[in-house]
Length: 554
Image 1: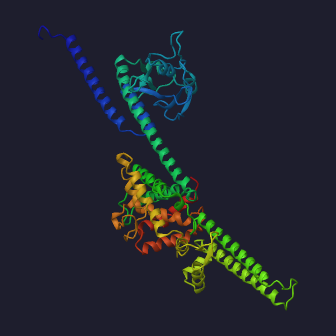
Image 2 (image 1 turned 135 degrees about the horizontal axis):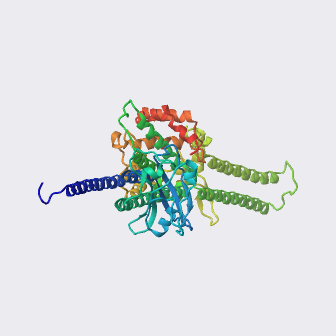
Image 3 (image 1 turned 180 degrees about the vertical axis):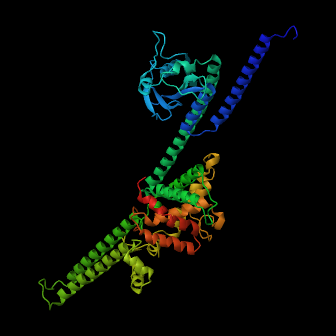
């Protein structure tokens, strides 16, 4: 052996190397934990990962995580999660407790100071904090060494507390009230620094997770507010967007479950499902750019138009009555010696009665015209159906009505019904003119222009495109782009089916009656035969009874 070598130096060198190796391993483990924390998006899973990794690198038997809740006026400490290897069957429930310095976690949350306690049952007197021994008593456990560390965000604010309990000599030891003092040891300063570093990483991850949830809640609120804004302009379609979203998401989930068929390769993860849901909720947002009069038009004539027509009829009737009175007055002036007592054989009486008869006939004609207008004004009225069948009676009636002129109060002759009003009443189907229909159809483009202005995240970037095509048809007959086949995103094709189903079954629209489910399903299949919508999706919609989603309360 050389002069500078000795057994003691060799032993110390080996011990140093072993310690250094262990610490390098712990640092590598810490880096790996940091990577794992950055990839976790679920808060509960994140907290469980933080706690399990902290326990793993310190050989802790148990531990818990508390978060500070400052949303309420009085801050509270929320017990979020706990783990205990010696009591694996004990279920820990989340609860809230006052944020005071009397508990170990409360003291650390308020002061930001760490606690490294060798034996929590033997604390020095006079300390502001004490161990709550109820758990030990109830479960025959024994809390000895405790390490309690604050979790601080990037700004130094304490957002939670990490508490580790009973650093064991070996991982496989089970602790009870009898052996706890013999199989546990205090936490070292090195472990405290290591876990404190981990707690800082954990705090940043928790803060990011909470911020992400806040952003998601914020956007969810924005979407719901947008839907409410749409429905406020068109109350008769209230709930339509929510129902279409439920149906589309339900269909997407069923497609994901398919193991055979042409759609078996399609799979939508939860982020894609959320993208589909938002697109469906916002698919009609562009209606906010449609003139309200057109959006709320329920009949062929606008309410104010019908009121003006009624006023014209009233003027026309009053004019006829005045003309009749004037004719009778003039006759009496011209025949001063006429009898004034009723007599069936009196020619003068017969002439006066003729004036009344002509007036009554004219008034009856006007009354018939007005009733006809009111009847044909209804999109689903009998008069409309007669007109759609091009009946001679309806044609004659409309022709006579279009040629009827009345004398206005200024003495000029005016049409009883204008050309524009006649055009609206002559609509063979529905209640919108071509120009009005273009205005309604423009809501799709309005939606797209609105949605594409939003800086969507990577996972939601297709929302504008999905919503844009919900009125496109596979054969190219849809609008606004006339897309065909695979040019229409499959998510959009699912939404189209949901949109058609809800439009036909909705019971809250005063301008049409809801159709029975079996009839609507038949219509969907007919649309498939016409190459309008996707047949595979329709069969899944029907066979998997996706439509029944609307019969269950959400």
